[in-house]
Length: 255
Ligand SMILES: NC(=O)c1ccc[n+]([C@@H]2O[C@H](COP(=O)([O-])OP(=O)(O)OC[C@H]3O[C@@H](n4cnc5c(N)ncnc54)[C@H](O)[C@@H]3O)[C@@H](O)[C@H]2O)c1
Image 1 (tube, rainbow, N blue to C red):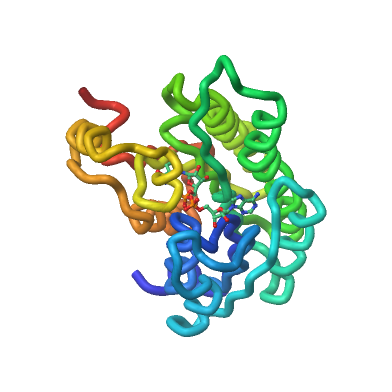
Image 2 (cartoon, rainbow, N blue to C red):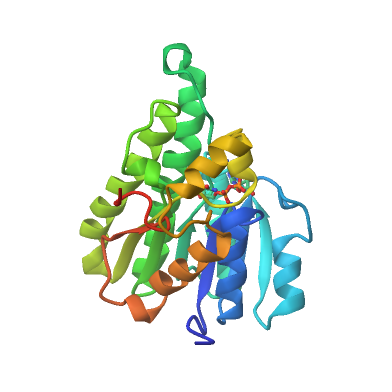
């Protein structure tokens, strides 16, 4: 299975930590050079920065670019950075923030910040990457949504709105960019063990209850998502376009 992404260049947002870090490492193990685009260089969970790990562990090249995805100038810098490796072939819009909220108290500023990172970042990141991909005769864009983009939850309404928007961004872009040879797909992770899960402040009882409701009876690992991203980025998925892949151990569609 090695080298599914030989001679490709991938840009992965939010790749310093968690799911994005695992996607970046998996892509590099499969031959892709990687741009790690993130607001921070050090992983939220601790450890060696992703680009250094890739340099140490693989034959692929990697570089870190400081980028706040809600800032379009930063997104341009991120896409330009991929030119040192031949230009972007794969974009993973993974950067995101989660905030539990009481809907009745949510403020316009909080709403705007979350939507700017989770949705505006993916919208304009895709636009800038697609301009390059059109010149390069194609590419693959992957949006990391959530099961919260499929099912509403009153404990984090803005997050659900943002992840639902990513789902429809995926379908609309697949329609627009398919004729240009660009595939656009979404991944909808369930609960995945990262620093973000800790942002949800689940106590041990709630975590146990959640795990028992998952047919696979475990919380997901970042690698569970990275494998699916690898599939979608590679030619194995060359006829998969405008698809939403739910990766949640069976949680959403059972019971
Ligand atoms: N962990 C889960 O249970 C879960 C479930 C469903 C979906 N997701 C989604 O997966 C993606 C990755 O989540 P994770 O669990 O790895 O989170 P994480 O918090 O562990 O890592 C997110 C990374 O994104 C970066 N980031 C945050 N804001 C940014 C910005 N404005 N610009 C650039 N980078 C930024 C952070 O610095 C961090 O490195 C997110 O979009 C998240 O919504 C996570």
